[in-house]
Length: 313
Image 1 (tube, rainbow, N blue to C red):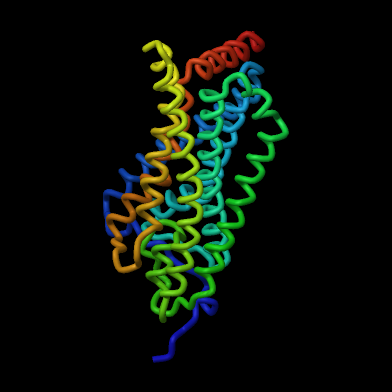
Image 2 (cartoon, one colour; image 1 turned 60 degrees about the horizontal axis):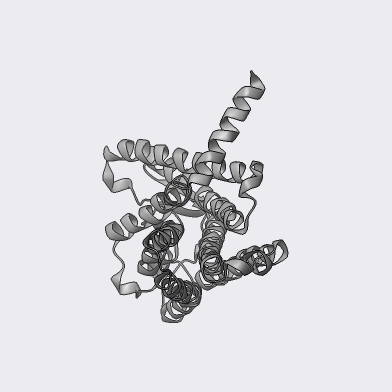
């Protein structure tokens, strides 16, 4: 049998949710609602931090860029996923699939580096509060954000090149709802061992570098907190890190499960559940867990909201 390369096809077809039957309507309503909440919340966070001068600090600067990164990440995946739920299956061109993988991988990697930067921010705030303003000056903060995005784009490009140098000759049906590396590897024909190794190395570099950096930051933070004499002081210090820590656990837990395992362990149903958590639930945690529970952000939201109402009145 002659093997046909994917470049001679018009593209791919997502069939990830086609087996759910009538459940697809319920899933569409659920995911569409969650997506609207996620999109609205993250945009609110960006706007509020921009408008309220009290939030023009490194911590909230990094938070606004994390919200921006999460918004871009979901924009590249969820709208097409919703179309697939409406139509049962959804086509995407070869170029579109490569572009989707590049941007989703780039933003996901950028999120990892931004979370590491936010961990460093908490370390300086707790361990060296008197030097916070000098260490995290506007120029240095801008450089950290730029480096996070640039690194994310480079790693995203690397992952995309590794996958799309393969030949896809067995089928053009992607058993998933977006062009992610595990389902694309499953679709490839021939020996994919070298590509699997490349993806594993790139994923390890991104996840380990950022996670080790966060771990070291939190070890130093914990040591500093334990030296605080008052219980109230320790509680306050812990509370400033709790939201970031929760987001880190979800983000790195899902990412590690998806990308740090061999091709033989892929499972359609389980992988889709983890991918839905990673693409729908985790971006929602940022505004809810990290921001909307923050008193300063809540106050800023009220000020911006009432200010806009009064200006209209």
